[in-house]
Length: 278
Image (tube, rainbow, N blue to C red):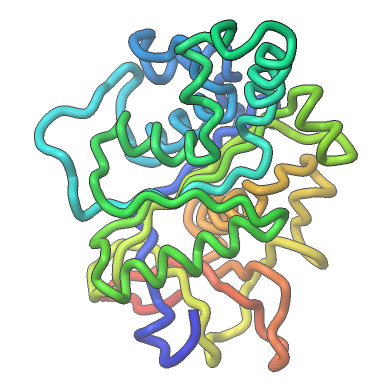
């Protein structure tokens, strides 16, 4: 996300924080995802997939149990961020093949071995027919997801991007991460910048006024306060910045790390045509 302000500016038209056990943002744990999504279709879905579905459902503002209707939304892309979302199933299937051969693998488990399972399931569940990407690039996956969303929108490959991050906290994921994980998910719905009253703006360009509050080191440090969401960390930060900017009235919130000029790498700002940037 570099270049002139118009090239680095996106609209944030929806967001959610679905963080089981965290006050203020508590969401249904994976085993109770049916309270948000409805019961149909959840059998054998990964915990991280269930969390991601809940975050997207809430970011869309849907009622509990509401399902997609109508034609496929070919302009809506999905960018999902999760490093360890399906490792428990990968280990389970690997052990089954080693012990009893391929015939021992459940046909319901097999699709979850795909590294793209979170992104593809979100797209199928909500009827999003645009580009479908899964990022598994470590703790910076969420930030890479935001850059990818910007590229998809600026290139015209999508008219809307659903950016979602989710991680589980199962034993195998925690072992591979070499430390405890915090299960949770977050979602940000992004569109190209346009003059449209009442939206929230994500900006990575220089020249913006300093934020009133920061999410990250020196401000509200998500990892220190809540725990490590690993691949979903950047999406959690983005959604939290939107919450602070709008719901808590901060107006402008920065997300670290800082640029060489001293400003944050990304800002989230409440905007209206009448008021401009707050």
